[in-house]
Image 1 (cartoon, rainbow over the protein chains, first blue to last red):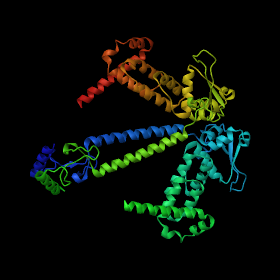
Image 2 (image 1 turned 45 degrees about the horizontal axis):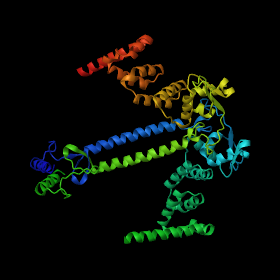
Image 3 (image 1 turned 135 degrees about the horizontal axis):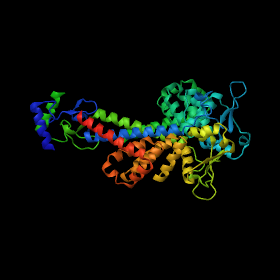
Image 4 (image 1 turned 180 degrees about the vertical axis):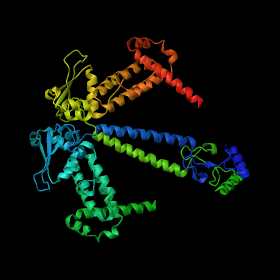
Length: 268
Length: 268
């Protein structure tokens, strides 16, 4: 191998032809650029293996997408189906009502199925399986939520889809926490963390704390502890000291342990 | 670039050190083997890009799996749930009965939900939305099917999962075709094609024909037309000539067009 390479090397040194397959000219199969030892990536075999793996992963994704499409329930309130004759009959056996609907007018009921609610939420399940008032009346009152958020919530239980902005993500996270719909809660946290910035960090920190959004809490805390110098000047900070000083203490504790870790890291 | 490579080449020719990073020693990042120009794969940059893509695809797969797990319905007949107190209440509003249950005894009804059946099958939908006898009685009779196959069928409508052997795959494919559950039909075809061999090819060809299993039909036809010399000696062939000569004609037509194509291919 070695002998062969040095021979090739000498050969190239003498002739320096790019095209001669016998030369050491390494051309990347992917980007078609020449590269030298410093930029060496993989051999052909590994490259081809990697390609196969990628193809397999893509096939698996297609299969999973088809499975999701099959399992996805048409939602009784799916906007695409509204007034659409191709909408299947509903056979709904329960309705949800936003009991503190901001709209002022009489609350509009949202149609649903007990079987779906119990399969998606342990809270609904306890409610409906234990023949509580909701089960008998076939009406579930949901307090402190807008009609739109309730619709989006029920729609998610049927389709695992929601169209989010920060306001909606917060409302849905509250509902997801209250009714223990883990998948929706994770979905909202992920969205809110993606929108996290220094301006909304303190507010989001308090929100995450209030609703046990662990992932969001960690993200907000690290954002805040990275900007401690600017923290005390903020109005939200003053408010938090007033309203819930324990949360402020936790910020300082997190900051302290961060400093300790950094120091320890430096020493080692 | 070129100049630089030849310098490196000369350098290596003189020193021939493997370890010296300045040499042309191309080591595959992935398998850690040395390789020469003939076996060149990708440069480092493309290798790293490919790695990132793979990570992204894997993340997408995890997200989709979580979505499937969320959307998957607990099935009213899920074996794992049988006699399991943690099984949610059923709220079933319809039952399916295997009207020609082989078991001899009285047919056992399979619990289900109208809302699920109509969302999975356009046939059930037409049946239940048009207030036909099934909708009023809340009982759907399924003919020519074993109780086990009916259970597996309903279970698939709730979970998109089935435990297949060739017998079950055939029974489920028939049901999937009859009730137009495309996803299940494709699933069974894929399984049966994976089990296809010369011995079962003629039988499967006739079966695929009978139930409009296009994918399976193509696979069986190409298996058969690749072994025409052995075909006429087979009992299944004789039977097919007796029972359904048109299907035999189609085999010969497929064989002929294959020959024509091959000839045309050779000419060009």
